[in-house]
Length: 217
Ligand code: GAR
Image (cartoon, rainbow, N blue to C red):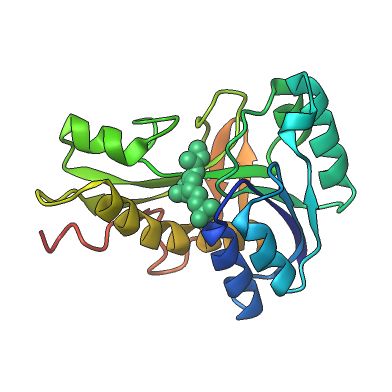
């Protein structure tokens, strides 16, 4: 069993999908702590209800980003995790922080990276008229929403889509790929090697690209 710390800023649905997978015995991992950068993050209540220790490192209390990063690292290291999982964590992390967790810091982003890093990914995908959209799980590097990609899921963009409909279609896939990526890491089969993703012995049916609805459209 590896120990996970999950970092959130809001709703926490990806966190909840990881908690559910761990509770169902699908993840050889224990979620030892959930940390939010906002005291009002909804996900804090979800975690507490499931008996997971929570902490808040409120970014508004720090004048400099480096001070926030240091306080955050202290809170994380207090849980001694093997893997740090960013799940809707909306603060930019500095290079020192990212290097400290090199190879054991992963993120999920709601686009097919490297397209649409940053905010409002679904709105921008609609504005660009892309026909395929999705989500990516990646190891974190000092560049925002950038880094070696572990797994992606693709969904179609439909003519009648608005931002909410597209976001909902992507979110279903987020809840599928993130537990999978974490499971691979927990099984010791996934690592970052010389800046590239190494996944050992994929089993049959295991794919690093999931595109459930594309064929039907
Ligand atoms: C998710 O869609 C996640 O991919 C995104 O924030 C949402 C959080 O939802 N993350 C980013 O945009 C990071 N750049 P959740 O709190 O319900 O998991």
